[in-house]
Image (cartoon, rainbow, N blue to C red; front, side, top):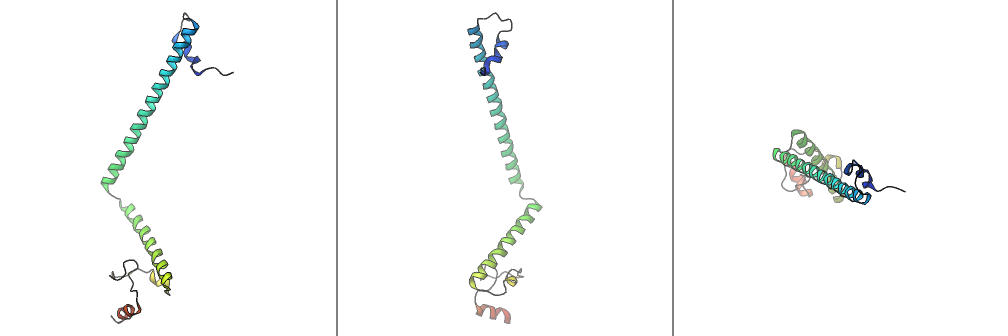
Length: 130
């Protein structure tokens, strides 16, 4: 049989063992509940402080803007995504030479925002003459 968790508080509330056992048990329960409430308050306070610290760090980080490493990583990820989208769209249109489509363009073309390539054969012919 397991003892009640508040039993260890009986000695704290009655060091001299002068109280009646029922009164000692009642005070031990009260002491135990107070102990648990104090623990809960401490945990809640530390959780609040931790959350405020996280929010402050996030606010400070967002105000500072991205670092050079984060920008470089973003650009790499964006370029990989765009390259994959170029290949996907070109394969849907039945393009040949998909590897050539993924190359970077030297100029930005207004007719294709994603892959910067002309969509029609007439545009390609005009591009090759220029």
